[in-house]
Image (cartoon, rainbow, N blue to C red; front, top):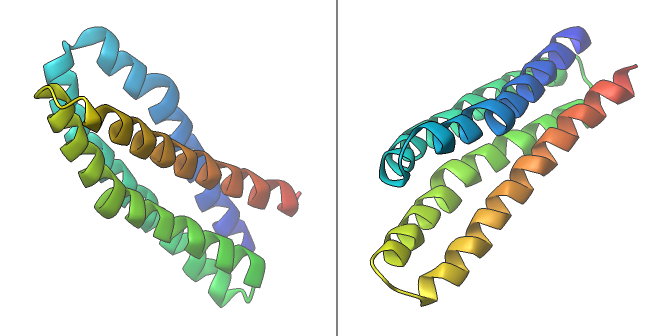
Length: 136
């Protein structure tokens, strides 16, 4: 079961790096700002849900293997994906819309929420890396 938990965290690292290094830059290079925004509003919540499912599976496999550190960190990662998908991302979208409509006060909140979302994403990535390294 430990191997399964580590394998799932490897998948998490893979898809997270893929999104950061391939998907997002490609979208901004190949689509205009309006189309990029539409695409990202669809893909990011789905990516967060995918991350939630994988993290939850890692948490369950660690729970069955009675690996408390792996279980708790996997569960934290899972809930952070949910927070990003259902709390932060909708607010980011709201403030982005306000920003695009000319509300200058929305710019600061958009940037703060976006930073917080990216910070959570990096923390999740570091948790998965930590769990793999601690296995070695």
